[in-house]
Image (cartoon, rainbow, N blue to C red; front, side, top):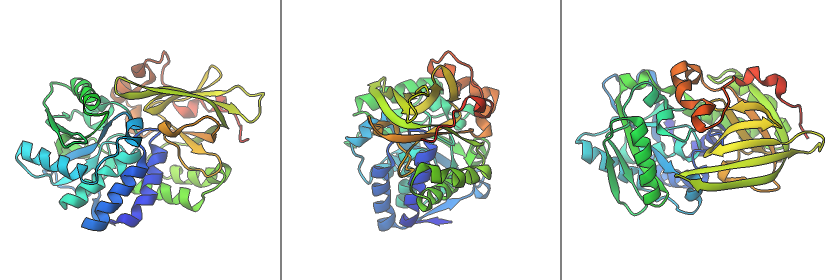
Length: 370
């Protein structure tokens, strides 16, 4: 399957939905990737089943605080420059590219790199959503080393990483992102096709395009989008979708802490008798509570949509007074495994709660449609 510029609008919409607030704002990456694909031509999207076991594959994407990307704009050729520098460092060419995460702008950066270098993109990613830290990728959980890795900053400076663990790599790449302006392009997790087959969340690019089509064709009041979205998720690798809340943002605070966007949003129901919903944020929407009751938590997905247009809203674009609808969706089965939960459950983010699957929390979801 060839992906051209005409596919990017739906891909960016669907990926923003799956990003759970993170992954970087997709609009700037959309513009940059569209320019590359219009200039260099479409890129080939291949199934993981069609990838050779001995293929040399890398991941590529942006690392840093997503709010920085609204001010420190990337260059169109950053993905190509980063990939070329990586190939020079390791002394071999890359056979295929795969996404860090299917979230936001990071779903588009691999397409720009692949088009520029004439290699395919594998249909899938390392999260099935967006998450803030490298050790939370399915690749790392499956035992793939993140290094050798390379980071490129806005001025074209390059840094090389060789670390003894993914946790060490995360600390180093995060510190480097802060030192290099707050947002960098990284090439990492080199692996074979065989390793990727055991670690990928498959088919998420094609699903994002389908999800984006559903959002585009049903654009309007968020109530209108609920049934088409539930149908789309019912036939996917994700779990059931639940309506969590509808209301107005009455408080939002965020700051950059340790290279992450950390904050909290409070949403008040249009029915003032209902308790408010709060969402804790670390780049992504991590935990949602109605009053004191948890109604959704990482690794399950929490997504905020504009109530009037059903457009997904990244965390860095939340504003006081926005009318929103919040949905929760079960995560891919990979993240329900004990070894995955050990690095992505709420306690890994400092929350003193156990992970409970969203379908088991559904009795606490309020039927607030506004």
